[in-house]
Image (cartoon, rainbow over all chains, first blue to last red; front, side, top):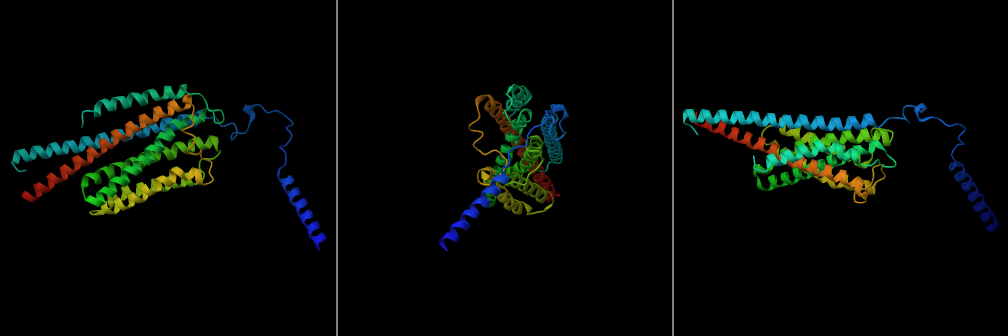
Length: 93
Length: 220
């Protein structure tokens, strides 16, 4: 019985080793060299357009937001001045 | 506006105008190459996004505790900045990821939590805009959820499996890569303070206008 258990353990060990060995295949042998400009588009994707897009997006969004806040402040300031003038004219607080 | 505002605005403009030159002079990162330079705007945006969430949350807590509308105005201003800097983070991040990860988006803990936080801020602004009278207290409660998400976003990369770099990357940056980053952090922080001040000013003036209309109505 003991011997059978030992054999089973050895077989399991060998099977698991074989599975692991199969899973860890070495990389495929390279049979030719490919110039970088001949790579598929996903692998040779240039970084510059992404970089420019990111920086342009940040600058444009910040600029638009600053303009928007300045415009809102100017509008509310004008309204406040108009109300102040009305109150001064009518003599009401 | 306070006296420091104009010089600070000029300094901020100069910092931003010079930032492309500072970033261009930084060396390329060995693995990521050119696209890594998105980091110098992406990370400060993300930090301002988290700081704005904290400011909005703390101001909301103070508003709920004291009922002082000064804190509510600060919370509203910060809420808008969460959406602004969150948008910058959530757009620049995927542009970087497309090149370095091969995909625009991964549903890892940090990106998902950031998106949730940004959507909470959008919900906060929508509630403030269309919620009607009394919605400011409900919105303040919502802001607390946004603030509670901040530590989770920050530490998530250290505890969950993710492609995002861990938080240990920034403290260990060499000077050549660290200088442009901290330069941009200062520029973004200054911009954040200026925008917060400007936006709070809009709310203060709007409150004065509302008070004057109310006074005129009562007299007439």
